[in-house]
Amino acid sequence: MKKLLYLLVMPLILAACNPKVELTSAGMYPNYQVGEIVNLIPVDSLTYGDVIAYHSYIPGFQERAFKRIVGLPGDTVRFQDQQCIVNGKKCEWVFIRKLLYEEDECEEYCESLPNGMKVNICKSVVPIDSATATTTAVVVPAGSYFVAGDYRGGSIDSRSQGCVAADSIIGKGVKRK
Image 1 (cartoon, rainbow, N blue to C red):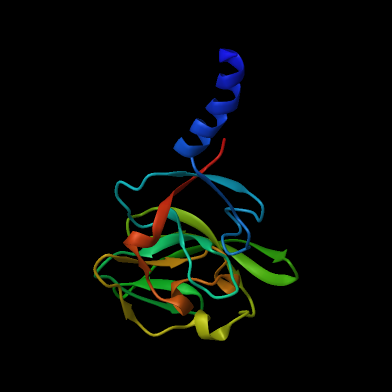
Image 2 (tube, rainbow, N blue to C red):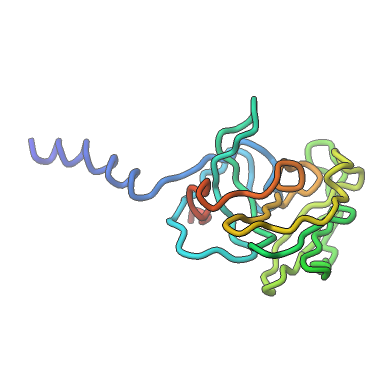
């Protein structure tokens, strides 16, 4: 009986201690794939490049979003031709390759964030939404973060939805091994 109880209860305890999120959109391509399961860990501190899951309030869309932090409280963030500019400095890009993703002609780049972290991003040759390809400057409010998807041409993020409040963050994403 003890063994049966253990087998029934232990998976529930492990699931509660190690929450996960399944990615339901392509907004984090090329680093994360649709359907990929990502572990979430508690947030102790956040910085550029951290990937977070947060409660999304986009009507008719996903309840949880999963994006990368590109702006911290107090930063001024804008985008020009899908390239992130933080506090007046462009996040440098190094070209990797051309590719086709879901019929979208893309270019993959390695982007250097303000803290030196390097992440691969995908730039659409023809942006899906020109309003998010180039944006006006936004000052990130205290207690909030500016997030962007790695698939810059196909991500719904802070460029169109505004900054993410710290109290809506569910956890920090960690790739499963």
